[in-house]
Length: 395
Image (cartoon, rainbow, N blue to C red):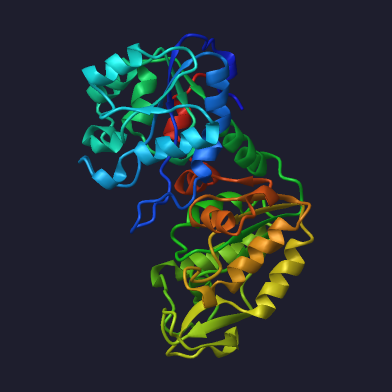
């Protein structure tokens, strides 16, 4: 960790603007928070600032309002949940910048918490508009980035503000960089990466960056179809990226040259449609019907993957093994989650849908680290610089 954190600056009595990631999933019908993991993840930073008598000003986005006020994406329910979790009052503002917000900030006492309105109600946020960044910066003396989930975005609240205020990392940001950084620089071997999800194109950079670091690469999910096709197998109506078949073949070849084993499914579940009413069956990869879709890995693949992963000291997982949203196609994904939860090895789960699955199964505490950032964790593990991290002060 080469960046300064909130422990490296004096926060007592200071106005501290904290970029958090409170972009939590909401129930479409009721608007209720369905998973508060991201709010919980920010609690250590908020508690530290409160205990050190800082005037805590939190800002976050919620959903994709695209620069307009969207009533169902207001921050009030988030503030209510945060108040319950931290057992302290959390006040809100009708906007995130402006004179009225400035007055509320001026009335804060040490230890008070204020949550600004959804910053993406302003189009200037995603445009990284300098005037908008300055308006946010005027509210505070110090800037803290604790939103790893948006660190790969060069927005006003992640990059712009850091030009006008001393910028340091919060505890969640530090934890993420340490956990993900360690599997890139110093993983305990054998080290395996379990990759799933729909598309090979989403994971190319990641695979290329970790091929010389892993001992074992296991491929499941929709992306397995492109690898299977590259090996000459029939994959039926499964989602394919034909233009990536050559690359898939090259990656498998490169893996062997680097001494990494690359495992593909040996059997799969296929179905006549992607729906809850679909008829499904288990078939070996040599016998995938031309009129069906691959929807999950099969029991023999679950057994094979499990045996090999159990021999590893470090496991990184990103991407479901099948169409997880449909319960009968979720067996492979659930089996992998339960497997990792039972290991004594270091287990690191990439963010996004994989983190949501682990949270839904109540297995977060059983993993070494579950990332709060989907795109950010992938970008980081691809070896890319994250704009929201680059802007922070060096130690």
